[in-house]
Image (cartoon, rainbow, N blue to C red):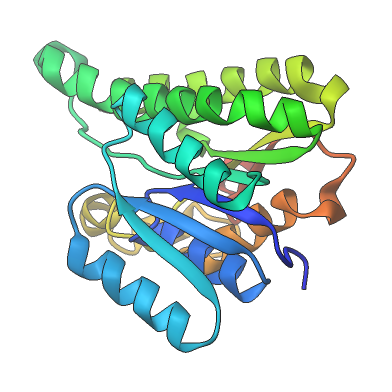
Length: 250
């Protein structure tokens, strides 16, 4: 198994892409701690189901905007396991709206969750990963970072920041064999994309070269690969998983 005995932390792990990541990493042998903000029932159901399969997963409630809580969680993991091998920053929200009508809270909440949240957990794991001279961080970006639509100024800005954070961290951490990458999904079948998919209908499939919406597990497979030793010479990359939509044209 690709992640046998690895210690992994996944933010936003109770739903969508994060949930698929937790499932796949546990199946690959990792001891997974995953975070949820409010849906305790969904998180506990996932942890119980994984435990019932003889795998390891533990749910912890946390708001990724809380920097002190991030450090506390990482310190507890290291105290218990002696190390932390993988961080996946999957927590994210959308609050779309045209810039002229966007309230400061809409901007702030998205930036603080999507970008500051990733920063808090990257910073929390940094000292341990550098000390142990090994580790892998995978940040969730989006094709919106480069190919934003109307009404996505806050979301696109947050994901553009993720791309820049990923590249800068990769240079900083590479000498200590800590790899930092990002995955940029396109249109994926999750609760987060439900509103957009509902508005666009089948038209969205017309502009995706592969003519279908992606599945969370398809993104999770790429994240799991990047977290594993199989990706030992990959760092600083933003890998698109989008069915070709970023190629443009019709």
